[in-house]
Length: 111
Length: 116
Image 1 (cartoon, rainbow over the protein chains, first blue to last red):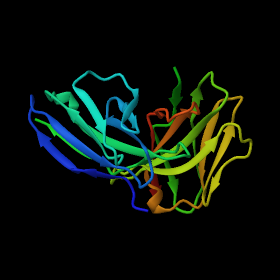
Image 2: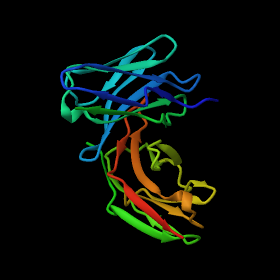
Image 3: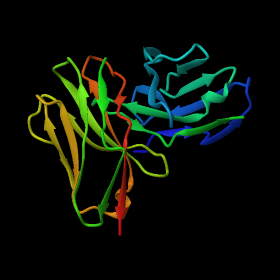
Image 4: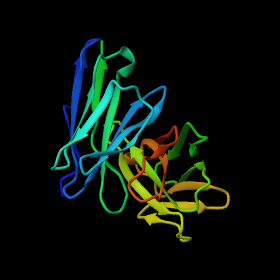
């Protein structure tokens, strides 16, 4: 089975812009979770989608949003980018075992 | 709220030797999952091993094994016959087993260096 894929792998944006990141889960997995990783805060949970519905949400401002499509692919969007949004964004998918498998991440740099 | 603590920011081990990484957690739940993930310089988060709290037997995956002490809320990872490719950040993570997937709570990580 192919693993979790994320696009793009690297992204450079400027403050105030918006960005959309994409995640394709492992085939058959219906749950997709998003995490932000920074040197200062470590790994923090953003949100989780299951069958096109947001099932869990972390403590992030409303500028961070997401969605899931009928094929389980997920996107996350960050609007009005701030310097502090520079991070590695990791997507993970899980199936019936509740074990999360991660993609390679998208490295976002905000200038 | 559940918390995960990794008290060793950095560890080193000689190639072919054994090393143990520590992890403690705090929860009021009786059933949950515990994981160790490895993040090499490529930044890909790789699942190393998983433990279900209701299972008393410690999980093992080839050279990787855990020492799960439920009463002490301790979950250490032992790497035997260390290899250069084991050099990475290792994260301990917790997840309760409510119905539906719940977010992982991660520790701050332990950076493991392997010395040739």
